[in-house]
Amino acid sequence: MLNQLDLLIISDLHAHSGDPRKSNAPSYYSTNSVYATPGTNPLVEIPALIRKAGLPVDWIVCPGDLSDKADASAQKIAWEHLESIRIEVGAKKLIGTTGNHDIDSRRALPDFDPKSALQQLNPDFPISLPCYVPNDRVYVDRFWSNNFVVIPFADFDCTLLILNSCAFHGYSSDVKVPPKEHLRGKIGPLTLAAIKTATANLQTRLNVLLVHHHLIKIPFLDDNDSLMVGSNILLDILKSTGKQWFVMHGHEHAPYLMYSDADFFAPVVLSAGSVAAKTWRVKGGHARNQIHHVSIPLSKIEPAGVRVFGRVTSWTWTFENGWKEATGDGGIPYKSGFGYRFDGADMRDRIVAKAQSASPGLLPWAEVLRDYPKLEYIVPPDRDALISLLEGQGIRFEFDTFGVPTRLEWRIV
Image (cartoon, rainbow, N blue to C red; front, side):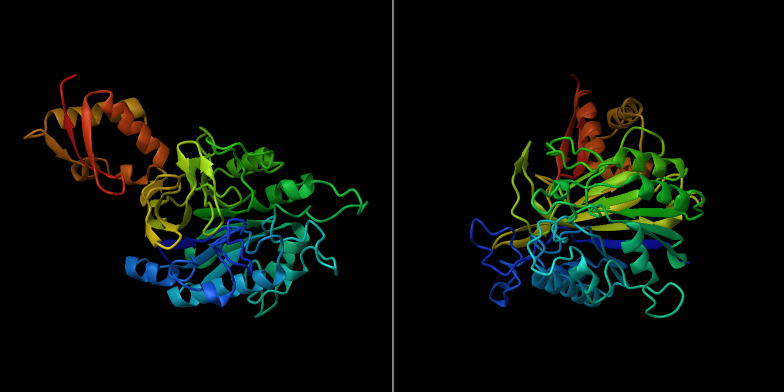
């Protein structure tokens, strides 16, 4: 049994064959080899980036939107490119799910079959993994027939739930008046009931959900009615398992790491953003193009799976400059985590007391982490709130270039 699961999350590629430098290009990821340079194509340097960081990878995970507007040719190239990255970084599995741009929901293709391009991808989409015998495609067929698939991984003591939130895209009884299903994610009552049955007796320590559409509203975004229909029921189902789930999604192109709510079993939710899409300004900054490495130490999760812990490393890509360690401006900071929820006022008072007794008055943040090591596993909004509480008590911080505290000082207020 392996004691750690490492994920590399690359979401919302929006691959196309045009010039990525043009203002109307949907993304910076062009399948035209002319633009296959580090400064114009964000996927080119990902393997080198991961090797330089010295981070292991078990799964490459794509939460959807391989291509833009169901461009089947670009979609095929994008999936094969992700497979080549998997091989280069030594990952065991490439795993994806359907995004709204992966399905021909607008009926643009002459031979209309909204999901056929995905079903012909190699390796198998959403995952190439035998169930009973080699190449049996059981998990693939379950995904397409049931709109989800539950996959056990004995080597990681983990259950993976891959959900198709675009299952209703592309279908209508009247081709002249198509429904607006392509504008939103949706999970129907039958699928919800089936997921509840399939997850009712989980015994695994780690439980992961991969989906394209977002289950909860990101605080600084207008969700434009694209919040997944049925997501509130799905969240209740996940919490009813008595385990804390780790959820990955794409779609919004805004990276964010949070909990779904204040409940004890509230899932950890990673909005992966987009690796390549042309993004927009959001409250407090500009949504960045990012990828994320998530390391989940199973040894820190009790066998019942009550609380999941993980560390997140994030990078930001900019046109012509390539990949850099993320600063947190418009995305997830370079180093963050999840799993530890604490009483803010109590933790504030403990750290203030430690700072007041520090000699010669400067307290390295590493000493705070030595006394409270679980602070490495707090989500960025909680870390920001804790810093704000401490500053209100006269604590002044020094930060490194990535916004991580390095040391603090108490001053009488």
